Length: 480
Image (cartoon, one colour):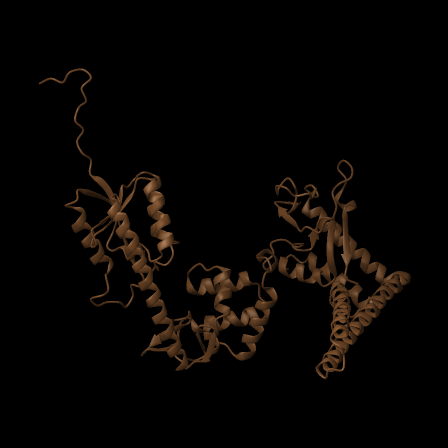
């Protein structure tokens, strides 16, 4: 019978598209009845999907990845496919393969549901397109998280027992396991030792990272190398929670090198990477009048807090002075400073006088702090012997604490106690910096280090007139 005008034609049902998701916490060396390999998972998923009329569009894996968090490449791929409208169903072998964190799992489920994607389990008869399926999924996720917590607690106890016996858990880079014991890797152990030696010798962290990456043949990040340098396993120790125990394995680093590395890591903690591996010669020294560090933008400098760059900032910035001209002016002032120290005896005398006055102020404040602390100790002793009435004791203690804190604060503002060098030695250091700067083989890191020994900071002010040259806007503040 011919179809009449306006009558809707029947549309054949389209099979729903599904992606098979597989996750294994640790693949290598595992087996047994309780281990659900990626192959077993995929077979069960396909066995369930075919009778359900689902059409497979992709298989997404997260191998050697924990289910405690969702920072996984496979989950990111599922998110991308859902956002692109490429899937209708996400099928997993079991709910615990999806995740072992209830809160993050439900958040991801809500995100997928907004895009029309439901979750199905191949072994637990769960379908989140139904209310009962969503209820069962929530309960099973809670069970999976509880099981993960129990597994973690069991492993913590196992690791602690191993540590007490000197057995290291895991396999740090540079070691291999032989007969269940940790032994140095014949290919990488020497590279780990050299990595510690280079860092202890003061090599830039970027160069150390490049060295280790070249030996391994894999890209590495400086943060991972710093984590490696902090690992006590390389000095022959094992870790259990917050405790460190002597280990049975051979150390790759001697105690002297280990202490040097840890001291440098502590000293550089919180320092921006651009200061540790500078890409230009004035990094960290140049600032605007409001003491905001200047940053390089191509061949020019800009204030990091310029109101045109940071919303709500009140700093007017310094414009866009040319880095080459600022650097040339800095070197010109260093050269003038050296000539002044060699020829202007009056200027030399004034500088030494200021330094002598600073040392006198420091000595006075240090004496005040010491006297206040001694008085507090004596007052506490007298109070313990009940020789001072309680009201008098409290008032006197408060006054002594205030005096000690005031003097200590003023002492901190003076900075480190520097011994003034001989003006002739400072002049020679300034001339050495000028020669160093002219050498094309010298790195930016070496130039910055040399300049910091002489210069406290470099202030660049904004232009006061049209095209005011950089030479009129740079003020070099020397340490001496």
